[in-house]
Image 1 (cartoon, one colour):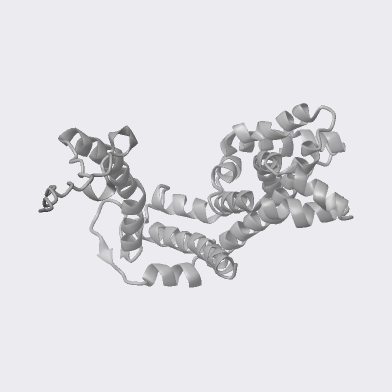
Image 2 (cartoon, one colour; image 1 turned 180 degrees about the vertical axis):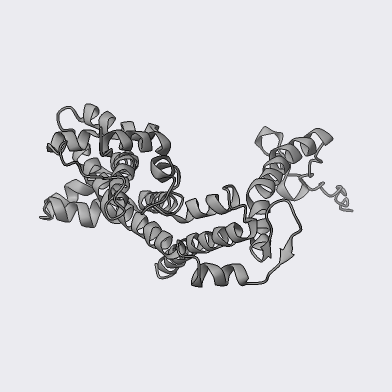
Length: 322
């Protein structure tokens, strides 16, 4: 008796995995979509135009100012290379330079030490939802919508020697104080006017930051026995670090770019000299010393860059040790 041989079966074909949901192909086999000419045109427009404008408006004049600072040019005649003579004249001979530097540093210190903490104080008070808080917020923020030129006109109405409101309120109409003409006190009058505007700006920034603080953090600190000051300093204020960075940048910018308010009052002279005013007078004013004014602009640029680099270095070092 013979046993029949088993029937030969064909090997089963390998099963292919089903395609992913949604009809997507595996990542390894995904084909790159070629950009159409329309996509390239949109990319060029959205990226190219801002880059060109940035180079033309910001970095182009910056590089040109650095180059012109080593030249002597009145804007019409021949450009002559003078090396570092402009800088030597500024640091050793130019009588208005060092007073302008002191005034700019004083401007920056006043905004950073007086106006900014005052804005934070008002923001903390308004965050407590006191009565008429919306009215107080509107009144404090109102100067922010005004330009510094308008603030300068208002300062003239307040601090004027002959018709100023301050002398009238103080009863000094017979023997008025020359708030704007006295070089020993006019800088402080301008700082008060500038701080009036800066306080409202800082207040609204910190108020927005305080609204974003998690109330649970304050409740936990209160349960642990922390008083109101300890809660603010150890819990609330550290969470405001992003706002602190913005406020610091704004304060440095406002302190170094101040120009219009002092130019409105007395064209930035007689005790109100600032670096921005000296740059304007030498480049656009009657002096027409483009090279000399460019050297002053480069010095102001280096001072501004020093604050920025120092702060960025500090932030990067803190992030490294976290």
